[in-house]
Length: 176
Length: 186
Image (tube, rainbow over all chains, first blue to last red; front, side):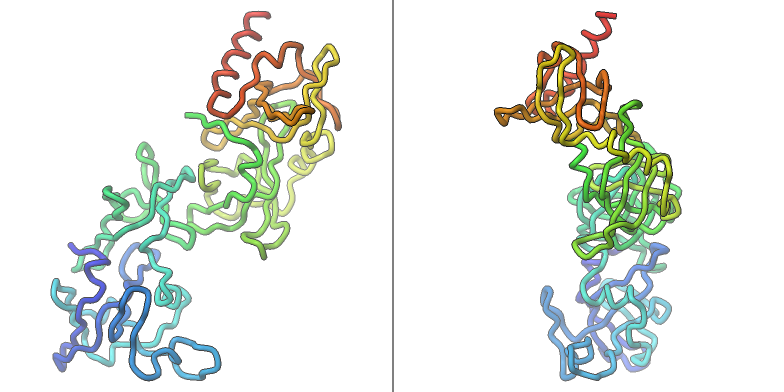
């Protein structure tokens, strides 16, 4: 079991070359409550992304006509997600972002700090961290303040909030 | 457990679907039926300052819950382009904001500036009115169903002033006192 915050900054190593190809910068969650992909970067310091030549242009700076950088690593291309490194099939597994969700996650709009709201319409806090199974990529719990909310209460993940069932209601969502 | 809120506090509240966790609209107007003393629905507008001025109506039977931070609905299909009963409830007779409040014996109490709602789950019942007196003081009157409502005036029982509250915290007790008095006098 690991968490998204623990995973950020972890080395990504290519299995065929044993070369480091980047570090985990973002974890992209699919609506099925599983990790869909991670993004790889040279280095990240807080909200600032420090990269090599072409990095800023590749991220869509106005006036540049550069292809998007190949920074997305699909979960299916991950051989192992260990405590010390993420092992990717090959460096060529990295690809450009293709979906709005990926672009949103890369720009910082991920699950972390998103509101956690009950299906009764009450926000109970912000998501401080997310626990997941490193073998399957399946999310297992949300950390909100000093509370751990199991995924069995999940109703939906979306742009407004992560919605969970009220404590006295049965969840019909994923993960149950 | 019910929560007491001002109706104007619902304006701007996001409407969020439970299937996709998306804020599809926000509350534009609160529509209530004074005869039933309850909210019958909401008119909706697009989200944010640049949102569309009108995106449909939401009857209360399409609501899962009216929460502190959002109104939840199962999915976007419960938002209608039009709803005759909601539109009817928006007639002048039911727009009480700005109406004068008179007692049965003809004393002016003040002007209606807000409705006070008791909210539980998806149901919002009118628990009373917030009134501004001529001297500027505000009070909350626990009268869910006035004696009569025209397009300009609410008529309330004599002695209503005895049950007013200064804030929502004391309003629950004011409601209980009024109902106990009303029940004992019947």
